[in-house]
Image (tube, rainbow, N blue to C red; front, side, top):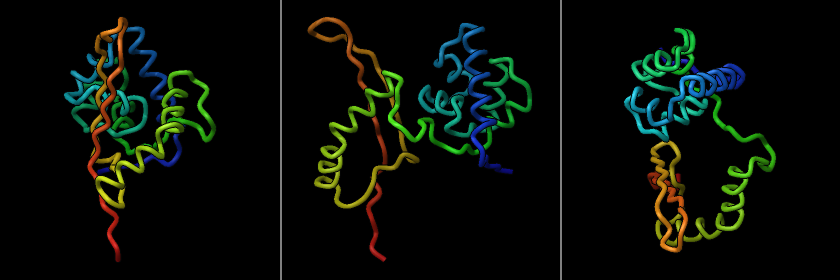
Length: 156
C-alpha cells in the first residue's frame, strides 16, 4: 500500500542518518544509485527526502547504508516535498541556483511560452542530469540539464 508523509520531520531525520552512513562508509551518490537501480539524480533526491523509492530500491539502499527495515519502509513513503525553507537560501551553492532563477526566470518563462504556449514544464515527468566538462578557457564547467514534459494549460 502507498503511504504519504504529512510532516517532514521523519524524512529529514532519515536523510541526515543516510548522509551520515554514506560518509561513514565512504560511498558516492552514484554507488547508492547503482544499488537502487535508478538514476543518480532521482536516487539522491529520494535519499534526501524528496521522492519515494520503489520497494526493491529502498531495501537495496537501506542495506548498502546499513539502515534498518523501518528506514527502508520510510524511504518508500511519499514525502512532503520541498527542501528549501521559505526564505532566501543561505547555502552558497543553493543560493546561486536561486540567483540564476532571479536573473533568468522571466527569460525562461518568456522563451518557454513563446515556443510552447501557455502551460508548465513538469517536475513530475522530469529528468535531471549534472555533468562536469572541461572549460576550453581552463578549469571546469557544470552542465545541468533539466528535462521536463511540457503540459499545456487546457481551457475548461
